[in-house]
Image (cartoon, rainbow over all chains, first blue to last red):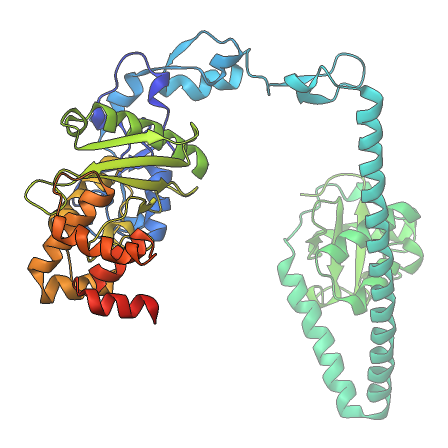
Length: 315
Length: 200
């Protein structure tokens, strides 16, 4: 809807007035064929009822509307209009194209958001400041947040319930699969193959990593570090059937003979460079998968792979 | 928002009518009712060389909240004999007040269109079937009746003693004057049939 003509200094040319709302054109657009101009919102409202030009009934659709020509827009932007907050005391006459910018900072805007200085620091519209009561506002805030928390808790319980249901179902399926595997050798082969393929596919999705300082290897990572790495592996879609085994193999007590003590590691050092390492994304850690490292000697690799955590030196 | 547009438009259109040359010639007029922009009173002069010449016809104009996206609701409050206007309710059958409304039309153009409707009736798209039938079958009778109604209700100048006499015959029998006029008009001023219809 356009601007009230009364807000402008002097008479406004008829050409700058929207024939629908009879205000000064706001966001003017024009019909493609007859070139009649209207406020964008006005003409769209009209077209939604009847797809014709309101002046001469030429058929038009919203999509066909064109921006008004530059000369019209320039003439409009030159008009001087009284600020919306005139009734609240703003004496400024601004150019139409700067009205929006002015309104944002107009001192007289009764709805201008200001911070409360009586202590609660809530941001509130200026005209509500007079009746503002910190305690009441804060109590409302606490109440609404309390309500939100109750809702979230309820939702959480519901989710937990569903999760447990699903866990039970998954366990049932796992048991079923285990039974199939044990009782049927063909099944067993198929399942093994599927698991191997899955690891290989996963491996491809991980970026190659280069270890620049093998000396930074942490051979005895603590629980929290292990949890962190496990979480990242899970987030990056590590196949579920190997994640636990892989994480077991992040500590020297589970490492193969060539790695399981400081002494043997000293001896194996020269072979480190032959490892194909995959990055644990975002972490100073690598996965050394068995399927990527068949070229390594037996005492340097384990099924399904190793996890090596470093203090630094991963690229 | 729609309400704002309606008020803004009506204020401006009201001024437009007041400043227009038609008002200067006393051919159309508009007034606010209760100082609101929701209801107005319009007035149009009967066009020259028609049975309505010399009459002033008052209109009730109601502005819907969705104006100007929907047309104003207009009806004659002055009784009038015209094929496209109900002689009972004053309801108007005119396309621009219905599906041919366009948002750029104004009170002024509506009043002028109504004036044009008085000059050129559309008997094939009637609002009042009785009037339309008379218009087509007995054009002279229609002219007389319309002139008579103009004189009776719209302050028209032409007195028609012959018709007044027929009405007086019925009112003497205790019939309300307007009812008598309606019955006579509907039966082409046949006193016998009109009487029969009233007392049946």
